[in-house]
Image (tube, rainbow, N blue to C red; front, side, top):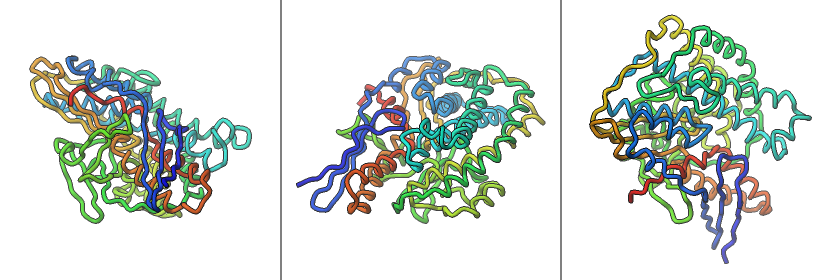
Length: 429
């Protein structure tokens, strides 16, 4: 007779989902069930002029809006054959630093940390751990401030547009951000030390495939190439080949499509990125990694929280370089003029949760005729299910309630943006 382990509502994640692990004849099968209704964003942009698309698709998620806006703008520019000046690219990458600070800070402190300290929420920790709570707000709020300066508002700013920016931030605003980034160094170092010192559940889940954007210089926010790591084999491919390598399809028990590579799970996001780029980080980041008890590459999905802390250190280092370069060679104008033409464009960005893919087709007047968006959570669903299955196998001797709690922590370690994964579906077959 089959036995079920069910978490009916995943808490401290963005969106609504559940997990079910079924054991029958000693074999386990896991299902990540996402039951939010589809919202047809892919269909909503069809018929829209290109200028409207980033502001529409950025509403897919309040946390990932800069990532969606960047991927959308880059896909539009690619379709029209536009080349963005390097200094405007640096401003965009700086905006994405803000997105990582806000998202990673939120996850580490507000969503994950209560699990390790035995609380149901960070608010319950205020009395006993006021300094930890204060640090979490400092990291998260700096990310919000960076996004505000670059995009115009704390959330859903409209300043990042196809072609660049509507308006440029002032040099004084960038100098202030630099000061804040300098000041946050100790907090980020202590964040890394904290998550590295925590007792993470022991779970080894070998990865057949790991995926990230590819930059030969090292960890970055976007590129025109991607890298697929298959054990010791590395394959480079272009953003135009994304849908050849990553295949998405619906499953009957979830409202979200799932994505696989060669029919198997693929890991994207902080752990995959740190595993891939650990030897190409800045010297400061590599020194800190060498002193940690957590070792990369890692096959433990619970180490994703440590990887997020590593990425915050590297993102700060990159942001300081971006600002120094911008202050020495400030953009002369906020954007370039785009000339619509018929064609298809691709935008691939590393969002906090993993690789994000946007593609659009346009007519000769710049109106969208087709679109496809593949989010990190859609790619990660099969990895989450496989890891939950292995967790149940590894901890089958524990009481049921303990296994349920571990399963919920496991899914939470991925920081899934469940709402992102159901916002896509078009009406086409």
